[in-house]
Image (cartoon, rainbow, N blue to C red):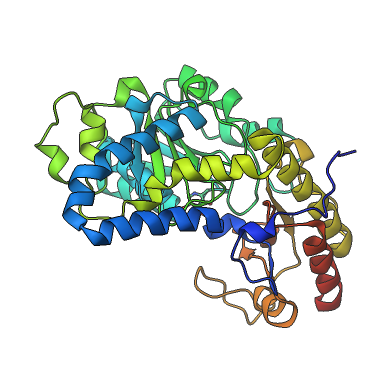
Length: 398
Ligand SMILES: Cc1ncc(COP(=O)(O)O)c(C=O)c1O
């Protein structure tokens, strides 16, 4: 039994539309007003004297943001660089590697489409092969998931793109257990931790993955768009940004090569990255008990929301509670036959829930059986009433 009163919420810290039950924090995050104010302040300084701000002030603020983030995710700042988003980070890593014809690069059927596409692209250009590991959903245990991944590993497997928290199915894979097992077979691991920071505690030094890519603009609630890439010490001289820029021939005295390569990716808006220290502080101060309490409260709410959702749909819970963070997906019956699923065509139920009930929640086409999933999110702006509204709407809509 949770100690949390799940009707308590912190929505007044966000500018989200109070008329909408916003159950899709997972896609693009949402930024608290205190952080928006910090960003506005940076933007005002930037636009007052762009050259002065970018050349004389950003470098120090950038380092401060890097160090604050490194402390939060327990990483060595020398191996940590900002990227625009997780897709950018996955591109940087995969396009830096030289694959040979016949090499195999593995991702799972729970992987994120854009990142899987990067694997397919890199494989196609080098003569390597993309291999998709089939992990069932519904899933009975982490062991069942590992069995699905292990089944496709071979002597030719060079790299596994491994989601920490899966996008369509909202599962937390036990990467602390899997990364060393893969590395022991001589396989490099690129962790797609797009959802990890702010959803659960991270210890990237301890994890020791070859590469870890993540977003700041999801559960850390940073302005869009900022992500990061953390590189193992052994690979720091081999990784190139997706956008080659001044750093390629302009080393800075005392600066690690990795930082030189990534710190100036052409002219970008630096303010989302500069806001990261504020995000860590503002959210951490919002709830008594700080970040550990946020992780606990949000995952308790996601589990309770999932219970309500499963009861409304009369389906069993599709994965162990221990594999749920703050996202949870539940199977739905197949979409109407006249619906052609694509990343750009919303499912009719998605549209109906929004238009008729003011509930924002994603309904995904899933390549397998079940073929359709609904995925809820839980952050501090959510409360139990949001999921009760969803349960009621689903009983009406189905
Ligand atoms: C697992 C996973 N990886 C990568 C991404 C891509 O994130 P972005 O669009 O910020 O690059 C997402 C986005 O939802 C995701 O869920």
